[in-house]
Image (cartoon, rainbow over the protein chains, first blue to last red):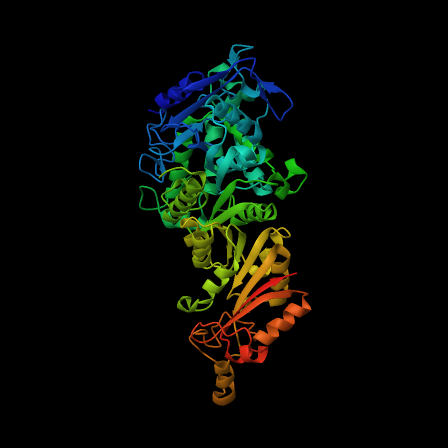
Length: 389
Length: 204
């Protein structure tokens, strides 16, 4: 089962089951690192139909370990799309009404060019030869995809966590191309604590002897243990202390008493091990390094002379920010500082903090208040955009 | 919102003061009743600032552009003259520093509209003078120990504050206990005695 998943993940890298847009040598991706990526490809999914005016397009940006399969069965895991609770026919983001696009980020591992992709110059996987990718690079690539669809202005760009960073970058880099923006559970920069957690994850991957200096695919190996530990550590940051206690407490796993050993006595240990093990089947370790780095490097204010409000100067985009009370990865204060910057820029902004104990991952879950906010915001923006119900 | 919603006759007065298609910031927007009224009747570009998260979430779910924030601390994040009108409706008396708040309103808006319950109303005076009790009226339904209204003022007090801040009163309206406008020709002392609520249009 795990081996099958891992094999499917490998298949998805160069020849994904999603549609793929190839960019040849005439269309290089300019990178913040000062170099270019060329040729490259973007794997994407779309749902619904683009209207004649091309005004009903919604771009969904995925998070660190997400992918383009936002509202269809995932070809690797066989599970429902990661935001199917929100997106689909008759759902809050109604694909009977909107044309929804979601693409795998550059640097990812499900079909867009990333470290596991074959480097055409060598015929081998890029590994660490892939230049460092930034959030802005991802967005630049998405803009090339949007160009391909002939869409001048997206009706909405939305996403959570790393997806939310892309939303903010979209609004800052292409203010005229975003009618409304919905960054959820995110920040305009990665905090020191967040960088610290990511560094722990990266070091875990690199400490695995199977990592082979990033060339593991050449050796037919994968640093599964290191990546699993990275995922376990990260997963804790996606939950809250209260939610962990509610779900697991100090409950024992399939046993009546402590075993006085290092087996997974506690349910929480067993749960985390499971999270780690299933993750390595569906994700490339180097991709994890690249994408965590992209988040670490993100600092929208620094890109605009140190003043976040300047990133949004003169913007006509309507914003709605959402945070969760128990999210300690991107606490409410991060969203609030973006709101203040948007106020200073005179932007139209709504901001909802949702009370929940489900932590950072709440944005992926069935949270009625989140859906009510998204619904109200999208409906009112659609009226303003002249999109019929 | 810190007074009874059913008593919000001042909302119509506020609405009448705002021309169509204005840019409006509603400070203390509550559940969004004024913003919605302004959007429907005046097609304003409206924004709200509201202290209670519940109020904010309700507003956003109804498609209003509202953020959670505190008039005492968060007005500084708004740009100078970013709005045609800034409305502070029945909220001034609940702020910690009404003078700074009013100063900020005049900075952010080309015009500020402030409505507040008049503590100089005869019923209030009567309650203190005769009963020796802090007044509890249908406009001000709270007891002294649980009221969010910590800085009451009279119409006269407010006029003085406006002078101190260099604000020009462009228009003032006092409403009597029945929500009726008190005649313009009446002197300030009359308004201060019989006005239960006041609505001021200010600029600086």
